[in-house]
Length: 125
Image (cartoon, rainbow, N blue to C red):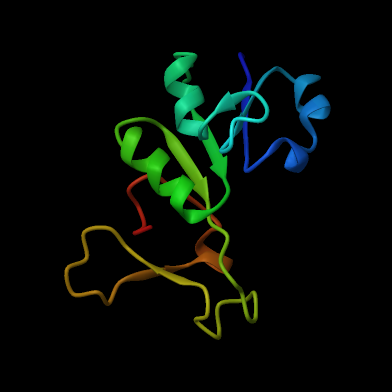
């Protein structure tokens, strides 16, 4: 299995765990300001390096997850959502996200009990 890590940060000073990830497989770093690695975002590294994958697992801020979901909607992409979880057991509904394709807006998933990992296209970002 070929494991590739792509880490995204705002600036060189924010980079962490690069060495640890490098010990596990090929590792690329992107910084938004270009002070280290590829200038830009995780999606820029994927395109510039023409990274091939069978499965992609991603965590991070919602705008990044949305960008990945938009670029790789037809791939096996799994995203881990970072939502506030009031109770952690599904009772308070603080962490709900809407389901893709539900025009009524009444279907949702609870990040704490149904996730936090979802397939691309399953939930609205």
